[in-house]
Length: 435
Ligand SMILES: CC(=O)N[C@H]1[C@@H](OP(=O)(O)OP(=O)(O)OC[C@H]2O[C@@H](n3ccc(=O)[nH]c3=O)[C@H](O)[C@@H]2O)O[C@H](CO)[C@@H](O)[C@@H]1O
Ligand SMILES: C=C(OP(=O)(O)O)C(=O)O
Image (cartoon, rainbow, N blue to C red; front, side):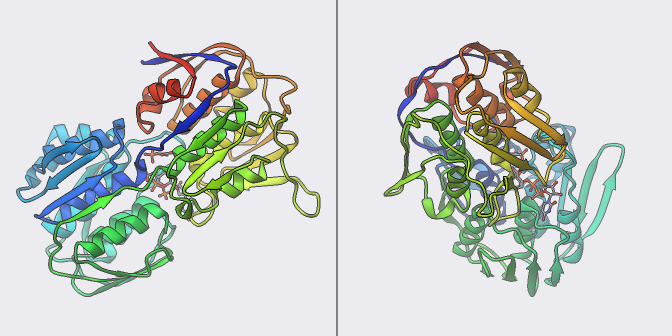
């Protein structure tokens, strides 16, 4: 188990450049399986989950050349589909959530796709019904081995159809889109998820020869084509990392510039931080956070009632930033109710913040009320274990703002999604070491 030692209470300063987006990378990498031609991808983050997916592609027979930092060329012209039945795949395929999106492209191009129960954050139930109902709608036969938790779909040729998804699942929509692009006829996906990750995937597929319209909306119309060709794609900056750095700047009262953030793809993120009273300034395509010397004050609603921040499918607020918003609120002036609607086990980490002196009431597994200290009392350093990727970064932000030396164990969770985080934080003045 890896560990960070953090000496908190120091001001940070300077500029930080976000990595390429983790959750986009997981979709885009799976899409290379849809063509035997070369696909060049740039700005791939060097993080554990993405590297695991790249090695799964390699094991499946994809030829991979690294061209430079974050740039790779993939060619899926000789896939070993039998690899999907091996014990090695059953083990490695369950190492991350994103591996589920191998199924759609393999089913579309090779007539079969198998996957063990995927891993990822343990943040509540994470069902896969939407994915498999989508494949079944396209004409696939489904089987599930309950003992091994091994899922499979097969179809000689997929057939386009109309479908209304039971929920706007992010990875589910990506999976079904990647299956439908090579299906016969037209597929309509209503109640589709429409995160920038999915918009990026659809744009890339269209450049490869797919015919997808409605990109960015919750209704995607896909006219199937016989084959797809190669392309070049660049990942957007990671909006969850960007939100994490906004929170870090505010909590440590530091002046930080976050470079090249692709403002137009940030959705609600800047305005939600502003509701907590944080100044988020646009400077070209950078975000500038001034030092909040006098703290920041949570805004109430117009009628004076207490602010609620909740997650919702895009263009609603992403659930992946709520843990960070909770930490930031612990030092705000005022109160906020954070309602995590999607995941039922993501808020339990607040007990660590309470240990550090934060005023939080966990109302139930989905809701926490935070009463900010307005910096009248700082958090106290402590020893903690990172339970999941975003809670891990939230605890790291708490530790950087706390007085004294904190220890965070199980930092593998953080490394799943944040590239070289300790070096990048040291470059802006953080006192953090990896043991
Ligand atoms: C690898 C990857 O891309 N992971 C992201 C992806 O996970 P993932 O694609 O696994 O998440 P889903 O979008 O399928 O669902 C997330 C959760 O929200 C619930 N749900 C979803 C849609 C809906 O309309 N109503 C509803 O209740 C689901 O039941 C589930 O519990 O999207 C999640 C939601 O943004 C993010 O937290 C994850 O970081
Ligand atoms: C929940 C997350 O990731 P995953 O879906 O890969 O577990 C996340 O990125 O916050």
